Amino acid sequence: DAKALAETLKAIEIKISAKAGGEKLFGSITNMDIAEALEKAGQSIDRKFITSGIVKRTGKYTANVRLHREVVIELPYEIVAEK
Image (cartoon, helix red, strand yellow):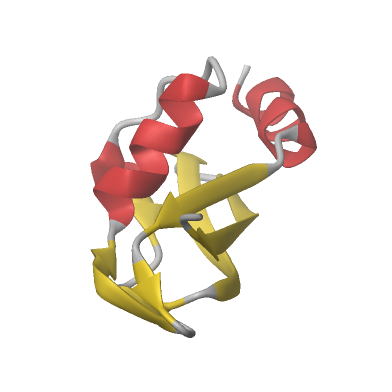
């Protein structure tokens, strides 16, 4: 089941929009924001299984998502400035 979910997650393109001044964000993007973006895409992943660190700039990043003891995937996501 975890491997099937991993393939589904890899197909999802995550874009998180946040208020920014240039490249620098007003605030930061955390694991909770990534979990909310996945929820909007139809996949419910608890934020405690997502490891990304705290991001304070726009751009492309990857987060590690632990679906099972033996299944950990790198999930790419992008942070864009709100318009």
